[in-house]
Length: 268
Image (cartoon, rainbow, N blue to C red):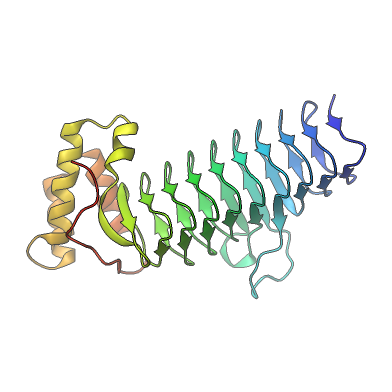
């Protein structure tokens, strides 16, 4: 049986799993779906057309499903979908989408959002993503799987961050970040590869060296950037990690404009 604290307010029409827990002073509006074994601890507000996956834990003073902070939003029934097994800590905010981009803000599974994080309208966040405290996403941002953000990093609108990347704390990301990269600094310069993340994902030393060779060839080899990327695509066509980087570059809707520094901060 659902455990709903007597001080909580759950609107008629909300779909609450039988074993979910709704703690003191929570407010759940009528178009919300809360999955199995979810736990809203206290003072949580869930509104809009919001769906929360199974076993997700939500700390006090979280606000999910609020209207987009966008002048283009026209009040439509857009959505926020959060996957299973997420850990959403204090004061996190996530907005529903706008009518401009499919009407959906989506968060994957097993994501960890530390205190004060914000996911804006129309963002797509992959699986196993970690946000440290006060990380901010602008609207229409796309985040790949296993991305890690340091504290107080901020990402501008329409930016893509590829899987396995690491964004160092206090960085302001203004341009796309390729998969497996390490970005650092006030304007989030590309400074190398996220070697620690690659190791934790079980990538072999040989595969990491091939990826590093491809990285050097793409950004510091002879010729234009397009020529270097095409050459790397041909040289490393059978390498799955390099292929992901090349695909990310080739599918960009606008040129990659991130500054690249030769002095790498990644480990050998």
